Amino acid sequence: MIRLALADLRDSWVAWVGVSLTFVVTNAALATCLIFADSVTVGIAAGTATGEDIEAVRALPYLNLVLTCLVALAVIGAATNLVVSARRSAIARLLLGGATPGQLVRFLGAQLVVVALAGAIVGDLVALAVTPTVIDAVARDRGVTVFAMSVDPATLLSANLGCIALSVIGGLRQARAASRIPPVEALREASSGSATRLSRASVVLRWLRFGLIALLVVAAFPGYRAVAPELGSDALAQLMQLAVVLVPLAGLALAAIMPWIVGPLTSGWTRLVPGGAAWHLARHTVVAKADRMVRSVLPIMFATGLGFGMLMIGDTLVDALRIAGGPVQISGAGPMAVLTTIGLALAVSVAGSVGNLVMMSRQRSAELALGGIVGASPGQQVLVPALEALILTVTAAALGFVMAATGASVLAYGLAITLPGASVSFPWAMLGWTALGCLVVALLATVLPVLTSLREPAPRVLARLVGA
Image 1 (cartoon, rainbow, N blue to C red):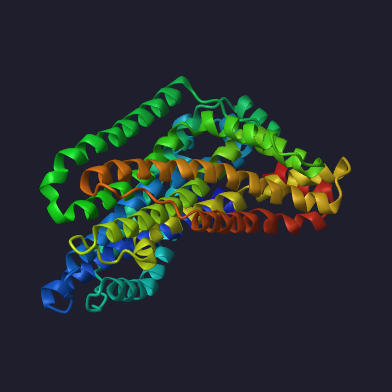
Image 2 (cartoon, rainbow, N blue to C red):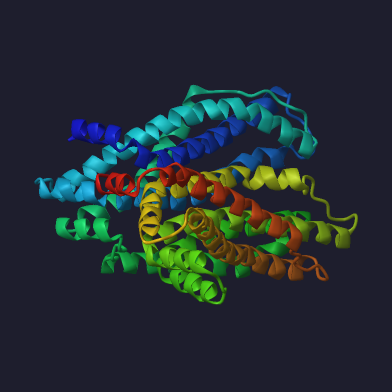
């Protein structure tokens, strides 16, 4: 089975490219966090890392580690689900050939581990290349001495094992779900592109996960009120960190119930927008491909949500510090602090969105080929994927704003306790630029991969999808 899995992996490498990109960035983020943590610890012990804010610098990689793991769990799961969806016909053939559900899980699991391991090796090299720059940027922003990078092989191994663990946790659930689909049903879904029906157990688990995360978010409000009097001058800094953590937690809660909210949301707002034939085709394609829409929206939602949330938190803190005056000070409240707080998790989100959109390029090319057969012009064939990227980004931005609003709610609640008179501030112009940046990435990842197929005969494009 392992030999068969490796042979199939060589034939299906295009489908795994998107996942591998996510694995590379995830491992690079984990390794960067751990190398940074080791380096600052060694620097403090040696006396080369000094400064008033050195303890905050020591805590920064661990906050990044938490945020990266939260985002990676959702993004890797979505990417793996897309691979499984894209390869339903191959999975069905294995089942029809006599493979048991357990063998299929091991088959997909082996491929998952191989791709994760390859991505981890590349991710280590990326981390070793970027960590000195990260150390220099953080040290200068926080006003501490620049300390040398310290690399321990055990640290890199820990990052690799963490990446593989996140990959297995996020991917094996999708493999088990695929193994339970009857072969004939899998072939029908592969040919029709219909959405996979969630089992009753999956529905219960999703709502349970949503309920648990929502409970954690709600508990943060009385929890902060209880500890705020004991925090003293650190109350504002702790409130910021709480709001930062609640933003991706809200994203995980939305990810759990996304199959039930993203379709009505997308259908609702796109129905209100007038448009021509290309808009009509793009809108109905996005809504009809429910699985693809959910998995494509999810990483873009995290990217916009993290960006919105941190810009809101940073702007609010600047206003709060202005109101507080001298008694309350927080160093590193500028744009660089925001980037070093969410930059790694944001990179995982962007990698996931690019990988997921590129992964579906073969299916999207076949749909455009069909459009050309029924009379769509070349201009319309290019416009349709561009409009699809626009629809996905707008829907994701709306959900991302919900993530940011969750952080804003606890921030408003905490400011009323810690610093009466301060209020939550949303830098609307910056939020717009953030959404526009995500749209540009989505456009590039959606339109560029299909341009080559538009120059090929439609039957050849369709045959390539059928043979996948």
